[in-house]
Image 1 (spheres, rainbow, N blue to C red):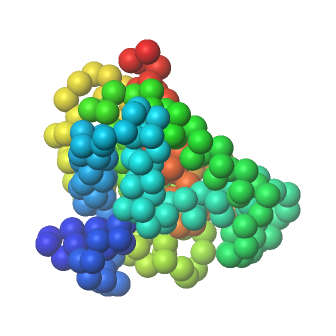
Image 2: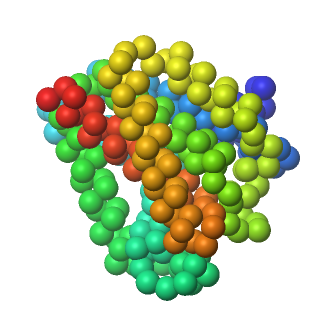
Length: 235
């Protein structure tokens, strides 16, 4: 279990905890919410000690949020913007998503995503910052479990080996232990809807399955939906 937890932190953060094991790497999915909890607690700590005003503090929180995760999910989101929003057959979309160059859709998507996150963070009670990273990483578990993987190889394929019902159950129990308020449960439900809706749409665009980039995009969009949803509920 310790190796699986270490593997989850190694894959999803920049923490120097060693490389994740490649064999049955899908078992690390069970502990993705713990990584989200760590990131959320880090953001909460930054909000508590920041000497800046609300807007600058929100910017600092967002910067740390990106840095802790190594920009992993932002990279996937950008690739999905270029591949999924463009025209062409599924194989062409997959090829575009492998291209390391940044296209127009990716640039626009990243700017809009980060800008909206910054504004949403600034309008939110800092105590709630622990939830979006938690739900975002759980959403990846749901998407990876529910939808097939479209490529024969790739980092996403490696990390799905060993992923099963047990990993989804454990990750859900972790989230359920942390979530204690009906508004948080409503946000969790929103995460489910976002993950399934985006996953279904991407599956159709990619010819029957998802990629690791889509998992990252689902994480980012789930986090954004959480921020906006909680902002509306506490307006």
